[in-house]
Length: 317
Image (cartoon, rainbow, N blue to C red; front, side, top):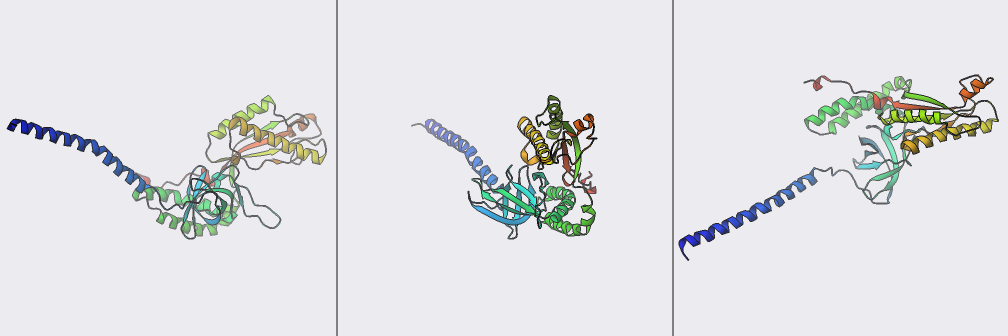
């Protein structure tokens, strides 16, 4: 074999090696990227065995749409999932039940007791969530103070330890402000309508459906809302009949909004029938009785969720 042929063979072998090397490079880089991505995931959230029943108490440290992260006394973190069947209430007292809350009222910094079962994803599907009314007021104050601090911390380092120290300090200071906060209504009315009914009927009229359609459109464009539904009657008929009929009217409104507009049931505060006890017009006239045969529907916004975060000087360019 001549020298020229030998060089050609060597060049051909070198070219093949180069092709193989370049062809394997994407695979190697892909494996590195995958490893980095895996390392970037949060590893401090404890997985719960599927079907395991658990009950624990801790502080809410993170919120998503229908889930939140809770940290217990041993600094273990759990992912909690809220469904339409989850009962969210304050602790009850002697001869009284607790106050119900929608899921969007669960704020960071709120101390809660959670009971539920694990799902295949390692989350705790909550059956019950309980907390103190005073802790809710403290969490509202805490959330207002934490928001501007969190924005600065995430830009600087992404570390949250100092943030929760500030939250704990704010929660302590909130005890002194509880008396003032207690005097405030927890909710603001964003929108309200009253739909009327025929005598002895809980069926929605075409006009009532149009009113509810307009209300639902506004609700779906609102963040952190709840819906209050209360049914009423005129003064005709027995007291027991009027209480039953007023509740049936309230249930008709809830069913229409849930089925026709896909509003989740967790958005509704428990519908209530008041019978003839809250008249808005004179029951001695036909026109007055027609006004009293109604269901009042209100879109409510929690002040702690809707209040804008204060602007700090560090946010300015």
